[in-house]
Image (cartoon, rainbow, N blue to C red; front, top):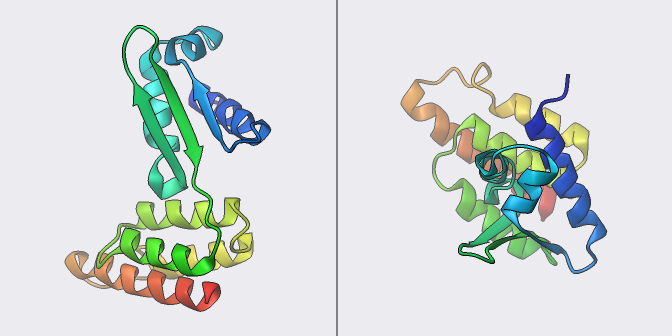
Length: 152
C-alpha cells in the first residue's frame, strides 16, 4: 500500500517535470487541501523528500499569500558538479546522506542505476567494518573517489 507521503512526493515531482521553467511554485494549504491532509504532512514531505542532498532547493514564503518554491538543481558542467559533491560529502558522511546523493545522481541520469547500486554496496555499513567513528570518514573518501572517477 502506498503511503500518503509517497503519493505527495510523486505528485510534486510530476508537477516539476511538467513545468518548463524548472521550478514549481505552490501553496502549502492548497496542496494539503488537495490531498485532504494537514499542512504539516506537506512540510514533512518537503523536508524529507526535497532536500539539497536529493537535488532540490526549497524556498518558503510565509504569510497570508505564502507559497513554496521548489527548484530542481541542474548542473550544466560535470566540473561544477564535482566541486559541489566534494563540498556536500566533506570529510565525513553517513550512509543515508551518501545514498541520497547517489539517488539524485541516478534520478538525474548522471550515473547509471547499476553504478549507483554498486556504489551503495561499497559504502554501506556492512561493507565498512571500520569502527563507528572512522566509518563515515572512510565512506566519504570512497564516495568522493568513485564519483570523481565517474564524472571526470
